[in-house]
Length: 462
Image (cartoon, rainbow, N blue to C red; front, side, top):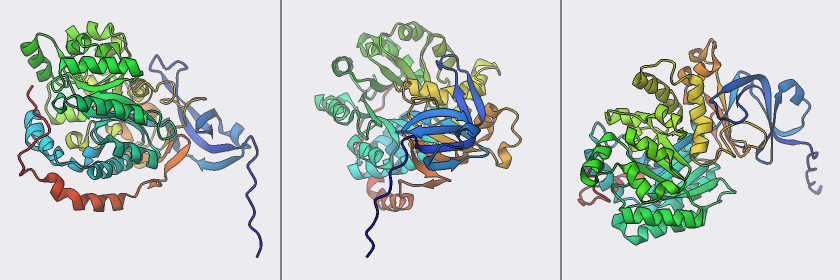
């Protein structure tokens, strides 16, 4: 019997991954001016989970690598960031259709969510992560229940995530405590791929006292806050009528705006809110998920142009698949550009390059990760997607940015890489078993969807 040999270690200058022969989307040095460009026939060198170099392909030809990807005809982009979702809600996709917001919550979604088990959340998170990886999303911000199950899925499948355990004041003090305990337990988890936040649901379901206590906890523990606020104009109008202040003003008076905060949706942000947000002492960002606003027939959308003028970054999002029907950030990027043009009455706003900037750099900033992800540059984490532009729907290419935003689709993403690890190669998922998840989730549907009990986890009244 011949003894087995231990493989020789690679030479010290060997790259872990070399992507070559592609065009690479690059940002301006500081990422401040919404400028993007493309390096043609380039290579990306990855070592230790980080981008080591972006160089002409010819110069990288002699670099030894453990793994090589020949990417001719493809674009290397920073992975997309989904800045606000409820990943396990893919289990409710298509369940509550063509309903006004109040009926959607009270008659369907919140009664069903009263049935949720940890296993339902786990399976939903698996399916959601598979969908996002296949759509070029390398990082997502999740705001939901039983989040230990979501964190375990993230750790296993290799994606990056910003996680918060949601709570209502109706849960009592324990809801807030569990949100904090989760954030502290999982902060820095999955080899640093998990970051965490405190996650009060919204000013209309969390009292001022609980919001103020949350702000105190955020400051004491160095944690950000992720919540819904001014989701739509009705919420802003109702808050003014009942309390004399907008939801954004509630965030100010309770100290939430003294922390780093991510506000989901903000389509009800009023002109009077802009100076409030401008003087916020923490890092304030907004996540916009335009498809759901169209489905609910909300009259306004996230005021991206006004927020830009006061320095508030707007990241792109999908919300949960129960309201949006998909976790397709690519679609959010295209819709954001089109809706902003229509809303502003200006075809020069929002341009394709600006849309790409929102989907990458600004979305990373919105999660407080702008120094780690959101661009392909030396020192950044190697969260990279490869997009195939050889299909008939993307040819010919006159403007690469316009082709990516308005012609390409999420299904054109061929390869998804997080921290230098390939999670999908040539459309094949490598870390998740979708058929198994779908089969098991289907078996659990009758118990999950039962509404005969008459319960709901909360009452929507705005």
